[in-house]
Image (cartoon, rainbow, N blue to C red; front, side):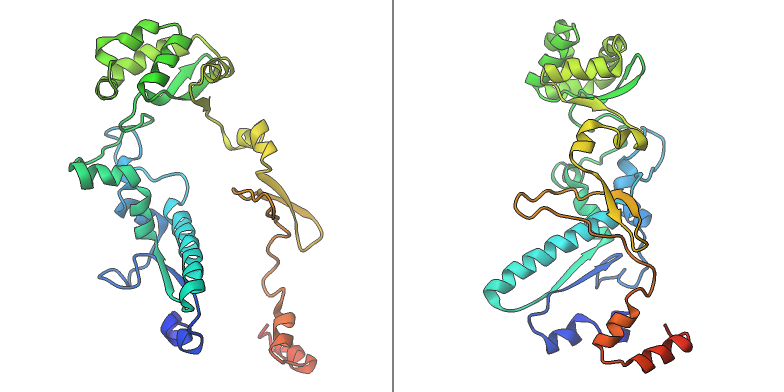
Length: 295
């Protein structure tokens, strides 16, 4: 589309060599799939995410959020910042390219490295961490909690906190590799103890022992959490109609120049007249465009 409209990088950079221009595509600006339409779920499948998500043997499962869409945008933003910094040295702009596919493959991180480095094809592991156990979901009296007790020291802390110190020295779980290979029996032993507590009791017990753990929330519970409230992750944003809308707040915090969501997106065409005036249109011309339903 950009080439048809004459707003591609090659054309615009001739007018402004300092231009930093960003594009997000489905599969990249060149290569055999360059003309294919991109969609998040397609990229999730092609990037390998759907094959490692879900319970063992369940078949491919999509993630609950558009991971490829979101990460492609983030990588594009990072690329723009790098290009701007480089321009401050070279004085020249450049074309920043991101794609759903490249972002998804990059987000596979250590799962991709398992294949590239070790030749190992990652499989579905459900709620278990693929390699570091015990990191999984465990039952409580009133629900479930996440426990992340990877590493010998944290694993021993967890065993002591749960009242099963003998598990820390058990021959079947003496090393990280053994804990991963014997994960089913280990998780059953931990679950036998975790069910003695409510979720709140267990989380407090484990965090007091410096063992990472936390609740598993529904969306309404997320925004009722005191830390989420403290971080301001539900922001009241003014709307164009003089009301307010609750939206997800910024994930980052800046100490000197804190971010602020000033207002929501307005209705389509909200700034038509303002933009047309900047382009030199007079009131009669704008009125004529409106009368002809051009705007």
